[in-house]
Structure formats: C-alpha cells, structure tokens
Length: 423
Image (cartoon, rainbow, N blue to C red; front, side, top):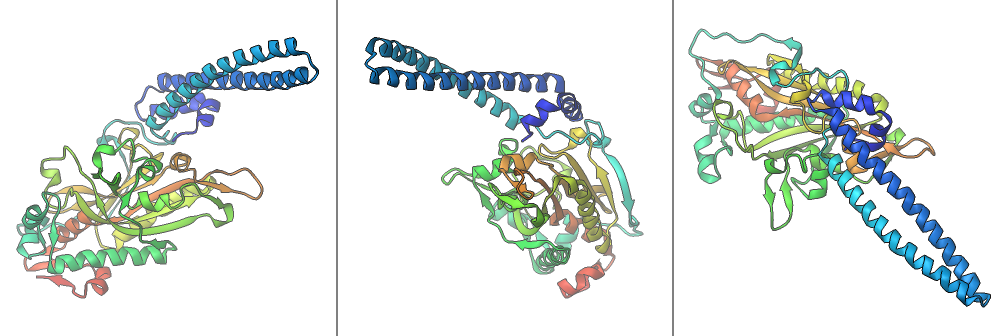
C-alpha cells in the first residue's frame, strides 16, 4: 500500500508516477487527498469536542461538590449534547477512514520515475541480450513432443488425475526437475540466502500483506471451508514471516530463499501460449526474497537481477533482460525486470523470472518496519525474484539442447542429474 503521508507531501510526484501506469493520476490522487483532508479535519474536530467534553465533565463534578446543583445540571446537559455530537463525528470519521482505506488498497504501487512509459508488453525495454540462439539442421521438436518421445512428462496422465495444467513428470524428467530445484537452492544458499521451507497455503492476511489480495483473488485457488489460499509463489509466505515485525537496521539485509510448488488458476488462458509447460496451474519454483534498507534497495535490485542472469548463463541458455514498462508491471511493483530465455523449437522468448523492487508498498501492508538506533521505526523495502521458475526452463533446456539422438544436459546440471544425456 502506498503511504498517504508520501502522497500528501508529494502530490505532483505521485501524480506523475501513477501516470506511468497509464492511470489518470490527477483525478485519483486528487480524490485520495480530498478524502484524507476531510478525514483529518473530522479527526481534529472530534479531538477538540472530546477535550471540551472532558473539561465540562471535570467542571460539572466541581460544581456538584460545591453544592451548585443548577449550574452543575446545566453543564451536564451541555455534556450530553456534546456526547451526541461526538458520536455523529465519530461515525463520520469511521466512514471516511473506511473510504480512504478502500481507495488506498485498490491503488497500485507508484512506479519509479525511471520506469519506461508504455501500455503493452511490446513496449518493454530490452536492456541486455546474451547467448547464441541454436540453429538446427534437422526437424527440431517442441518440448511437449520431446517429453513424449523420451517419456519425460505425461500431460494426458496429469489431465486424467487432475485436469489440464497439472503434468506428471516421470523418470529422467522427474530427476531433471529435482536436479534443477537443488541446483537453484544450492546457488542461492552460496549467495548468502537463508533457506526457508514455508507453508504452501496462506490466510487472507498474508495474501493482503504482499498485494495478492484483493488484486489477484480470482487467480488463486481458494479453500472455502478453511478460508485459505494455495500460494501463487513462495514470495507470499516468505515475506509474511516478517509481518508485524520491527527489525534492527543492522540486521538488514534479510535474504531468504525457498522452493515451493506454486498454484495459479490462470483463468482465461488459452491458445498456443499455454501448450505443454508454457503455462501451468501447478509448477515448481525457487524464489529469492530480500528485506532491505530503503537507501540500498535499488542497488540490491541490480544485484538480484545479475544473480538470476548468472543462473541462466550457467545453464547455457540464450536469454534477454527486459525493463518492464508501466503498463506491463505487476500491481505491487515499483520496478520490474523480466528475464526471458529463447525457445528454439517454438522460436519465441519465454519469461522465466521477474525480479522486482516493491519499495515500501508491501511493508506498509505488512507493517514491516526497521529501527535505526532510538529513531522511530520506518517501513523497510522488499524485493523478490524467481530464481528460477522451472517449467519454461525445462522447456528451453529440452528444446535448445536436442540432437537427432537425444537431449544434452548442461555441464552445471550433470552433478545433480547423474546423467549428461537423455536418449
């Protein structure tokens, strides 16, 4: 959630930042400030009334003790009138606070001023490209055909057991999954991230804390009997470990990594983009999360982006890095990099990671703060990144490394798979 104090003190900047998302900042920010001003005015009037009522109550007691009954009753009647007026103002204040809260939780994060302007994914800015795109002198197969040919993944069996988007991994396909998970976790731990094994179901407060609720309510699987949601990403439970927590500034940064299955309804998804592993309802992912001092969060974002790039480099995959435009950014993000790998048989780029700085947006919702010395606690900055999501990594590994006789395993993975070739 954005800070109402920041919006109030930086109105024009807030309007400009919101316009990067193609939102009429003048109208929205104006409405927010108007409600906030009415709320503050009502709060001041209520505080004044309460103070006056307390004074009258004290004076009434003094008059009754002094035997001045008539004067005491007169003040008592004035106190009763003030009490009624106080209730009216209190109800108005509650209504204004609710209205302001509704507006604030529906307002997306204010993008950094250097986020590119644009409405469509085509307007994202490519800032880096690396690796050689494979060219085949044979009939290259897409990963779904390779998975069937070498008995690695059974999409039909998953459909039988659960439904579309829930594949079954088998044999070397299952072992490749496990190898990638361990490889990503080992690399993250070596990079200083603390491994966490969180729950894969969350309550409503956790979904609200990281911005999934109310923004992505329809995209999450919900268990009504228990009021719980299946997680869309490990970012949610891991970041919520620090909900309602004040940390010491000297303990920053806090670096965490977690492997979890992830669940997304992907409602409305259809067509070639969802075939095979391209878009699933259940998939595996290793996530990295940092809680950082505001002064260091953007330097940290660059480090996290470069770290994810190093994983793709080790997997020998051609990749590119995009700086997302305002119209393509997530609800909670202030700045996002997407990393995409090239799918040789599909001849297109596939997103495999998003690395984002949320600034204080999540921390405000989570009440996650840090304290420097004896100073008043202030919101921390939170960041997260996929490092990495497995389905499209597997798709690209299979497609890019295929030969007429089988599929080569990148050298970095061989110690984890125990084999260097699928054939």
